[in-house]
Amino acid sequence: MRPLFHPQVEDVRLEAVLHALSDPVRVAIFKQIASADCAQTCQAFASVGERTIPKSSLSQHFKVLREAGLIRSERHGVEMRNVSRCGEIEGRFPGLIPAILNAHAVEAGAA
Amino acid sequence: MRPLFHPQVEDVRLEAVLHALSDPVRVAIFKQIASADCAQTCQAFASVGERTIPKSSLSQHFKVLREAGLIRSERHGVEMRNVSRCGEIEGRFPGLIPAILNAHAVEAGAA
DNA sequence: TCGATAGTTCGGGAAATCGGAACTATTGAA
DNA sequence: TTCAATAGTTCCGATTTCCCGAACTATCGA
Image (cartoon, rainbow over all chains, first blue to last red; front, top):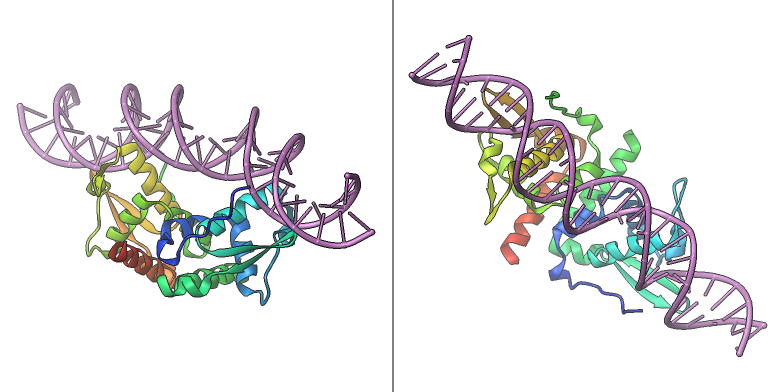
C-alpha cells in the first residue's frame, strides 16, 4: 500500500480541480467534507443520495479528490479522516471553490 | 447534419460546465472566445499553443462547449461564428466563470 | 493469533475520447 | 448550372479512461 499523495498548494492544477468536481458523486462528497465541522471517513459515503457506491469506486473518487488537492486524507487507526483544503486553495485560486459550491447549491435549489 | 443544440440558461448543468472546462484545449478556446470582442470561427483554433488540433477533434470540442451552454454557435455562410454566453451563465451561477478564468490566468502567470 | 472493520489494488468489461477519412453545406467563380 | 474550395460534421476503429467485483493490506480489539 503506497503512501497517499497530496500535492503542494502551488502544484494544484485548475484542470484537475475542475475534473474532480465534474462528477456528481465527487461534488457531493466534497461538498459534505467542505461543510462538515469534523473530519469525515470514506465509509460515511457508502451511499450518496439513493445510490450505493461500491467501496472500490469510493476509494477511487477519494483518490481523485485527494490528488487534485481538494482534500487531505489521514489515517487514524483503522479509518481514514478526510478534511477539505478549501483554505489553501482559496489562497491559490481566490473565489473558485466558493463559486462552485454556490453554483451547486443554486442547482440543487432550482432544479 | 442535425441542427446545433443550445441549452436554455436554466438547463445549464454545473457538471457539464466543469467537465467542459477541465480540458486544456477547451479552456484555451473558451478563454479566447470569452475575451474576444468579435465572434471567433472554429478555424481560428486549428492550433492551440504548439499543438495542431485535427478538425474532427476541434468539432467535438466545440460541441462540448456548446452543449454545456458556454458558447453559442451560429452559421454565417461557410463559417461558424462562436460567441460566449458568459453573461447568461453569470445570471445562473454568479461568479463561477470569472473565478475559473481568473484561476486559469493565475496558473498561466505562476506556473 | 484471530476476526472484524476500513480502505486499497488488481483486472476485465463498459464507456468516453482521439483522429483520419468520408460526407455535407455554402459560396464564388467559370 | 456545374465545379472547386472552404468550413464543419459525422463515422468508425484504436486508444484511453472509468466502473465495480474480487482479492489484498493495514490496524485494532478480543
